[in-house]
Image 1 (cartoon, rainbow, N blue to C red):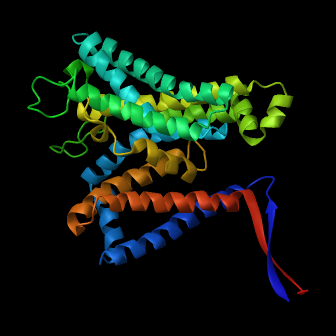
Image 2 (cartoon, helix red, strand yellow):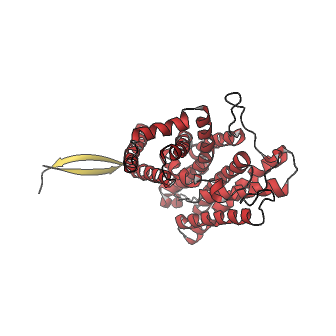
Image 3 (cartoon, helix red, strand yellow):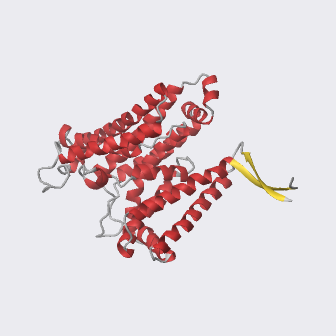
Length: 367
């Protein structure tokens, strides 16, 4: 008698299985990361406690977690649409930066003296359109020329990043920034308001217009994907492109719309960062510490469910805040946070196998 593994494709994946797989993947990732802490001579239990306390154990930590979760929700929700259509958009980072550039142009050069009711909607509208355009370009290349979108979207991240750096070091460099690569500060009318202090006298950076927009978009995208004709076409195109073509669905239109929505959502995140957090355009890494890339993990951990993106984003927002805390308290290098995110992505994507296939152990006689 010898054991053999049998893999059988699931027709429908029960929700309890998806939930269990998500929890299992995070648990295994944390176990693997524990060995990284041990290699650095750090007690893993102490490190995880510091991360949790730093991100969720205080009002300030919780508020910073929410601030970092906002762009993750927007980018992650957008990515679910692209991934559902089987378009591997790795370019949310660049689409976010293009949204930030567009919002800065509106705030500083188009409507520098306009009232908030004019400038803020204009910033969000142009930010969405800029991110959408940055997503549509690789969509056209994929649909018409069969260019591999992983490469094109990834390369466009570098173009957007260098464009931001060119602007803040060059023509848009602020006159009052004392040599720093920043633009001039936005006027109060172009700055997003924040929630009242959670504790009297304690300031925070929760820009509630973008938070409301992110939560609303998660609900809207869920309805779009699950309840509308366009959402059905997106899902069918992703699950079975041949069946979609046979049914008369336009592959070009579906891919184009999926990337337009995906890029536009990331562009909104860029608007929130420059108008609600920094109040100016900074160098690329100063605007985003990699939100567009982290959102890929967020989307997969949420199993491409727009509503599940919200708790997933809070988790990774907390990891970003807690990661900053342990860098200071434990003396870990900046690269350690990148290792954490990479390990989690590895286990989350690897666990996807368990949601698509039922794996059983069978015993049979050896030959």
